[in-house]
Length: 157
Image 1 (cartoon, rainbow, N blue to C red):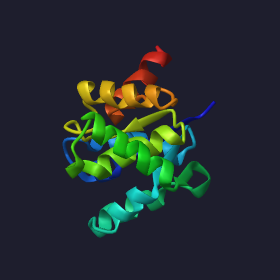
Image 2 (image 1 turned 45 degrees about the vertical axis):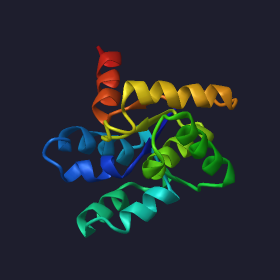
Image 3 (image 1 turned 180 degrees about the vertical axis):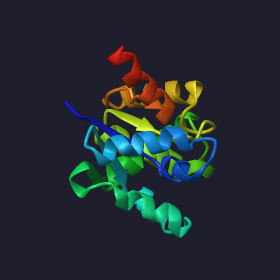
Image 4 (image 1 turned 135 degrees about the horizontal axis):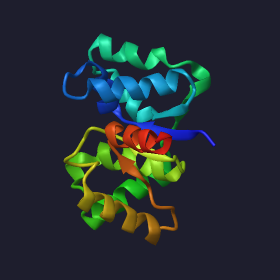
């Protein structure tokens, strides 16, 4: 089964960031060749509208057959509110909570982000997943692109 990887805007922008470029570009290579399916949401598309043109162009490099676009809805909004209510993240970071909720609701394989403060953070991941379980959802894997690619490398050895 091909992994469905939800990516937030930081992973897309990471393709142009010296610190993250290596892993973001490698992950995008896997999307382009169909090894993995890139999953983005309407929230990601909204965020990209405010990004530099070079960042906006990156997502267009993925063939449409390897790119899935999903839409937020009342259930994902409610789940995001539950994360905020539980203290997983503050209300100031509603968009981050919404990324987690959308990825959870649509049962992606893993959510990938370079946001180590509000998303790829062990304490927060535990809180997000505690809410997920309490609400009847599966646990969501949340990893940086580097961690996702390392897992792949280890499987090949």
